[in-house]
Length: 148
Image 1 (tube, helix red, strand yellow):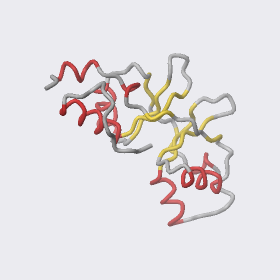
Image 2: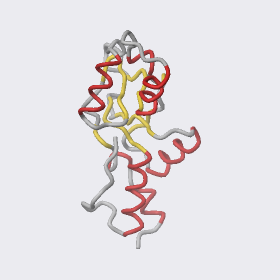
Image 3: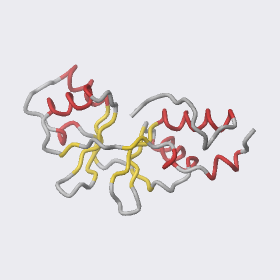
Image 4: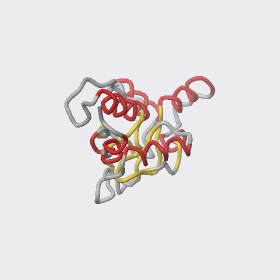
């Protein structure tokens, strides 16, 4: 069985879901909905024209829009959670989990060493890591719960 020390040595990079899909702040709400539904993803980074993260749209954000005030003229910028918290992909799982718990959030944007968006680390990714550590197969290819 692995110790908590092993858990401290694991980084978010190993468990982050890569984010090949991003949207610009000007993207229509219809585009955002289609992208998230077709790709079956629950989090979508919103970027400026230079690719820097401006916000994050979650499935919950979309549900609010659909329920209360859907307007076709809304954009990603209108519904995103602004100033998302991000971490470098070398951050330990413990640090990432602490940041998420402290801020009461379900995901982090993960950046590479150049500051570019690498992916999304979600609470489901953290649970997958915990399962692997508890089973003793961290670092091995194991079945995981899918989330993004």
